Length: 331
Image (cartoon, rainbow, N blue to C red; front, side, top):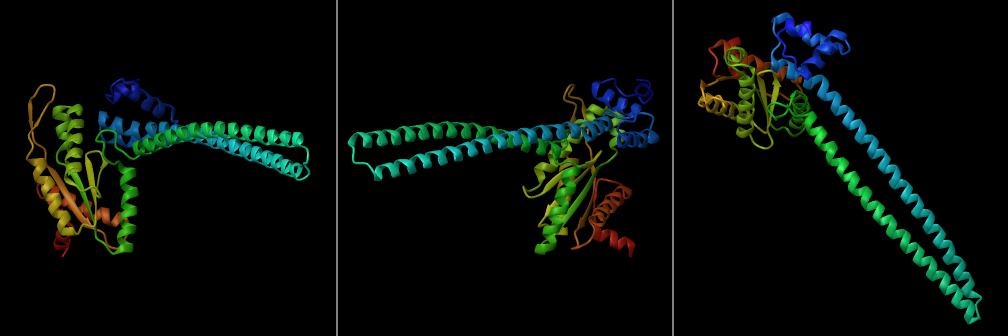
């Protein structure tokens, strides 16, 4: 509690979990992350706290969900296998009864004995039909439970790859998709572009209007990116106030045009506080664009887009800089 007070952290259950883990050193990576944050500033923002909680505690919860669902799935599969095994035994038993009956039929001359064999066959057939109906019912129930678990696992996976605040892809999803799309671009010889995006003066905006309003701005930018791209593109929150767009089958000039249209659209929106209706002005974006070169490390692709973003900031912000402009500066 002293640490939370020292760093101006609100006393919420989530924040207490974070700082308890920090004080007890139970999650070393979390401690290192917080040490880096507090070395840069006295206060830890609510946005930073939310990111840390999502990173270290939501994943733990998701892991438990997956483990629990996996255990249930294993139990269900075991039940189904038991049902199948029993059905196999029943079928073998029925087959043996048929074989004995057929053997008896071959030696029958007495009508009474024939009636007994027919009755035996009818009784065994009825028994088998009843067992099959029970098996069918149990398998249908198991199938429904397995489908429910499958849906649950898909939901957990989606949550694990989605940024909780903006509801677009998170950094983990970004990394996975960029790797997948770069592999596809190399194999097919198709273009792949990357746009890195940063909200200008965001920390200053947070200090002026508060972190809750800042969260609404992050949601707004995420929604604008989602609205601007195709279904095959991936808008993602890269971290903090930085976003990214992965653009498969898109060359550099097309990516620059898209980035420019997003910049203009965001800059043209006047923002208001929902609670009060107060006009808080507009925000602007700085964007850097790069194009994948087959076989290059993805860190190099990201660095070129990042370099463009920072050059855009250095030139006054609210603009797009492509990797070709970086080459011109270097030359």
